[in-house]
Length: 334
Ligand code: GUN
Image: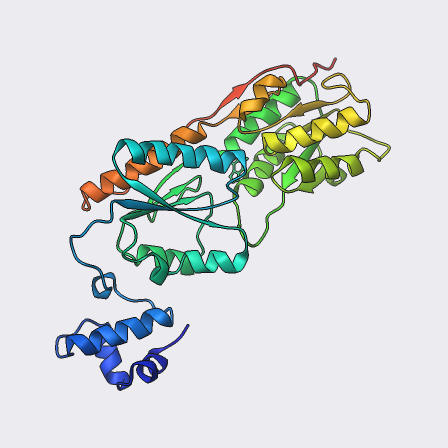
């Protein structure tokens, strides 16, 4: 991070003046302070919200949403929920979408957000400590969707518990040879869901005295295509499990396609379960965990709007329940 000396050089004043200006002290000429704040912003130096160039009391009537992967079901559903709630309240949505790591760094920067939005919703991305500092430093309400955190409003499900429920269902149906298709935890996104759903799966195996076979852990992205390819490779092995838990339904779709290509039947030859309750899960009879993603989006938008109306109100941390939907993708053994 740049420091006082660089800001001083850039704005043509002494470091002592920069220090006084950025601490909000009085005896600094307003034009000088403006120059210093601009230099500090350009250098990504954290600035007190009250010093930022914003017309106090002026609302943008716009909420910013930070989300990657708009083409994936989960994100499009979450966004649809946010958009609906904002539209009904007469507010606009400004979307910050990114697909690369450097773009992630850019969207979280204060200077790109300040003055543009009255609140911020971050979908499914646990912010890093630095990102948290930046977004909380904006002095506007922030809500995380899909990630619990006590520092701001949030709405999430219990990913571990859902994975426990569906894995226990497999065990209850007599399965002990169970594989898992996990979502890779790429650094760029640092999603917690993949680890948490895996944790829930492992908890249940342990609770039931079932030893996990590491050869039964397959990894892919949270999508159908990479899951299909990973399953194609997995199916070339000699010993196969009787069931597979996929960390999301889109992964299950790829797995089912791969099984069908090999002439294997679901659930007779292999049981398959997913997570999310994607719109197509019903069409293909997939047993899964249902989470109300659009509703989560509506709740996050409501949290933000409530905080804008009453800035002194407490932030709210909400946990929304999930439920298991039993269809016909699991075979009863014994
Ligand atoms: N990516 C981040 N969170 C989720 C989730 O809950 N479901 C799916 N499918 N993808 C995600």
